[in-house]
Length: 264
Image (tube, rainbow, N blue to C red):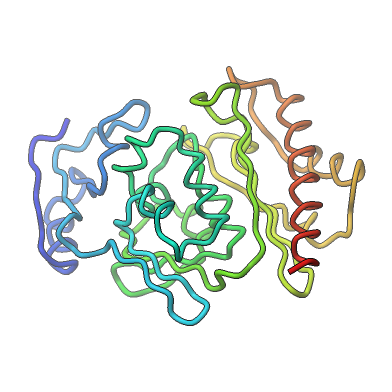
């Protein structure tokens, strides 16, 4: 339960407050995760990021720089945002949540659904941390200690990328979330969420690097994807169903993405 709400006015001050309250403090971005089951925090101190001016979206060359406090709905509304990221942002069904949640929070949260992360992985996104270091988003989400994100960088807004989210209903929990990208040289990225065992109670999106390196299509690709993932059965579906649907979705997305890349 949050008992103290602190509002630093600089990143340096925010880091100092976190140091002072080590073990009992949590970063407070939009707040959608800290106050809701199953991600509700047990920390007593909330350190707000609201005054740190981390909400800008800027295009620098072909790279898009997105402040960590940029709200999800702002991504959808901004003309600079790549179509694939707009699409992924819309996977968060509730507009009320999109108006509150932030891109940094969606990446950093230890949650069972990482709806934006597969598309960010496929877009080769990196994160800039408060200590000025830069990490690939895949390395960040696999880190046990997720440091404060100040910026998300998509290096090439023109990269051909598409994603899809399988749910039982419009507002239902995700069964599988997938994204693929294909660059001008034909190099592929295949990223999935919902197909790996939970780690400390939360999901970790994965890349299928072995399959990316192969030139598989149709039923061969479907089977390879199904064999490569290790989902857990729950209310969203059985292991067999999740493997099957992951194979079908990736195969369809990759075929469409390759077709669009050839036409571009």
